[in-house]
Length: 52
Image (cartoon, rainbow, N blue to C red; front, side, top):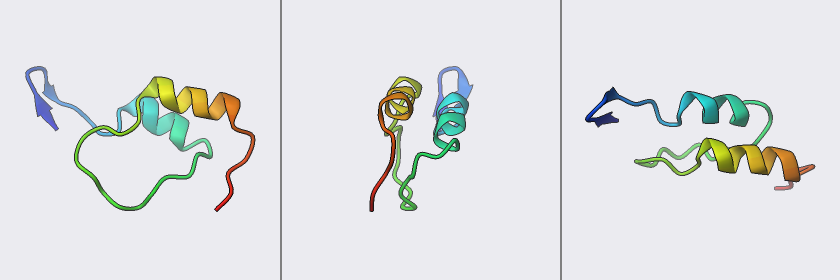
């Protein structure tokens, strides 16, 4: 994504790192940010397991 400050990665690197620690994600690619670092951290902290 391009903004006034240049290229931004989506998800943000902090979000990607938290999600890579075991939070399942969908494989469909959507435009824009759907998960912030704060929401990813809250999910990681409060959720013990994920069920399909």
